[in-house]
Length: 344
Image 1 (tube, rainbow, N blue to C red):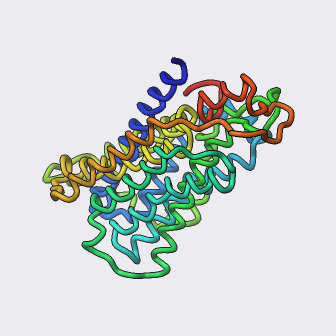
Image 2 (cartoon, rainbow, N blue to C red):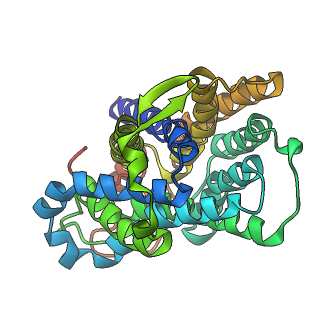
């Protein structure tokens, strides 16, 4: 019962994260059309969120001493890497192709779990990935703008690998493989320092000193309506970044990297639907069908749970041996991230 409730809560948080992340493009596009460079919007997003999370970072300042590698990795890969590689790829390949390649991440997560961590992967998770990727191809209408650019494809694949880093680093923050006496890092504290590290990296990449700051004092057009630029920026910072990362990280704790990764595919569907509703960008029949397929894939994948090891495994201090009650309890709760406590 406890495991079922945990997976239900994890699914809800993963959906909340997908909605929050999915709204970033809808809010960012009017700002870009108003005159801001895309990388400057990304810098504002991450830096603004980092400033909001400063009190949390100060409260958990011990993490800088205890988990410097985890914090740096989270900031470099989960925050700065995904954004920088994705936006760089857009300058060379169509948006739909870049999105599809980036959201190959769930399949790459399965590969990491199966072949690197040598953990079992359920058939439901594999089937969910296949359906989700196929549905995404329809949502982004990948056939409408195919153009082969090797470097652009590599950049998009870099974004996918960085997204894998987000799920893997989140899972490793649970303390698996460490002694039970070690205090696991607080999830929101890790996010706070990840945002700070990401903001530092993006400052070098984006060069905000060349930004047209006057745009933020005006308004931006959203489907024929003028919206204050500061309001859109607040949406991007508070909802599409702080809330999105927090709910996403905790959902990995309750589900598992592979399952949460498939549910995250819904972000592209949600972004497309929000663009239809708020920006007047209408959906075609293949996009509607593709969205339904992605949803089906996510639902199939979330119904799965990580399997306990089928045979003896190497054990050490704080690592439950396969077949023991502790091992089965750990398997039932999935890949627990950053416990305790529960927390974008």
